[in-house]
Image (tube, rainbow, N blue to C red; front, side, top):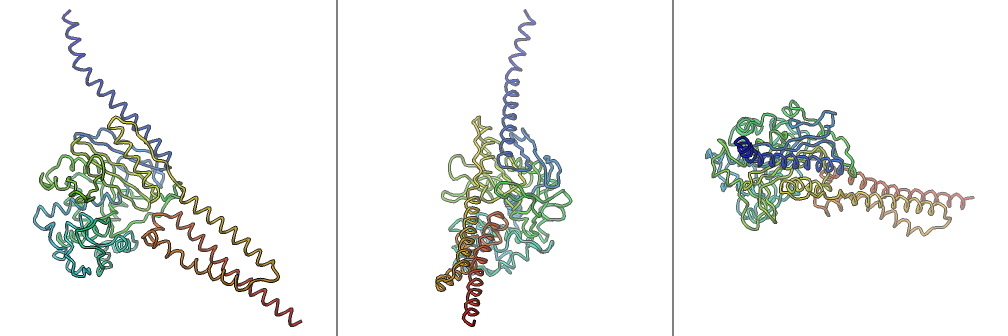
Length: 475
């Protein structure tokens, strides 16, 4: 009887742990199944996911391959896009604690050589840059970001110099407008204050203390860590890119890291450490004032639960990080394919992970390629109409010359003006369209070619017909 009682007592102690372990296995299996479904649905070649809870990595797995054929692991190097911004904000806060930077100080106190036109408005402060409320327009920012060919040592200074003289579109501090140029300027401030390159400062003061040994902020180090090109998306299908890397872009979007390293960052943001005091960490964790959308380097959901998160994208990579202090829970997801029109669908992957962690059923958004297919349809239709139009013109013996000349002028004028019209309507530069919407860029170029050729052939056919008429008259 004594053995039975002891056995029953041991069972009662162990049973809850066995139940929890079984639940954890079920959750892990559900995540595995969901991720495989998502990667197949969105045709993502490779991905790495890590989830941390109470200071422990409770799930970590990787799928697929990189563009060089290597298998993705938790230590595979990805470009992390705008997930670089929270790391830059952490560096600024470390300098604030040292008394070398003040959040509400005008930025000219640190980079007096950077000029901007205020028209009597108040100055831009460090806080305005962090909160994306500087008044520098996103369109102006796109002119100097995601560029090739900058100097590896002075790239940030070069980019900021190009931006210098910009006219503010809004009063600093009054309106949110997401703009990577704000974090480019923060990178310049870090260099000016520390008397180090941005990459060197991040290595010494942020990455090393956090144990992020495979995270880098310059191209040469990224290559050493295994950085390879990612993938563009052409109507959902992955196409190997050329490995765009902006030597000035680390503060806002061109750091490279791994899923394993970013779990170190998440754990720090959840639990703190020697790098920052609790008070400074709390400032980074705290949602902005009511009505604002961006904190000190972090997005916060506009509805539902409030927690810090950030997504990141370069033309060939995408990343996402979130952490929920109340639950001591966080996750990072890295993928090696991107397209701006697929961004909303990709968001549903992490939404699904959060749903699974909350005991709910995940749901994937459908990948919508309608914009590309509609544009392709327009290209084909225009090509057919142009061919029939030219065929009709060529066969006619008598034509309404004024009508056809007008049509030719319209075709050529529309071909010339299509790119400015398109970029004005969407509010981005043509270069940005090419980087983040390569299939749309190609289809629009096809439209331009058809319109231009149609217009030129109209004039050529009219000229030939006119020459024949003169020959007939002369005979």
